[in-house]
Length: 74
Image 1: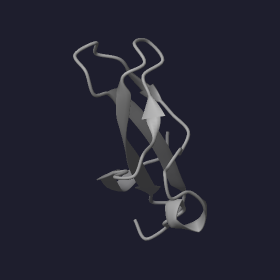
Image 2: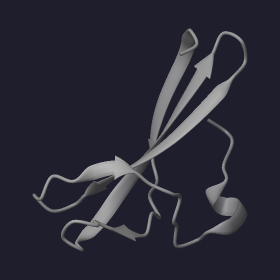
Image 3: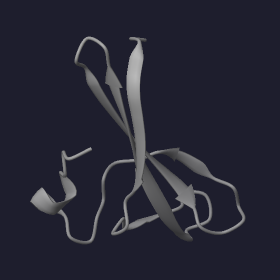
């Protein structure tokens, strides 16, 4: 892992996904980690919106899709 200088977490408000465990709608957030050497790592994590407790890595599945989903202003 590279030394990190900035971490930001942003909710993906138009995320469209379901929990693979119970099928309930899931929410998601993107973590952007910037390193001293200029590397930028992005990780999307989805979380079940019901009490089943599932969370895990996810692909960006949004209702708006396309370029609107690829916001690089982090």
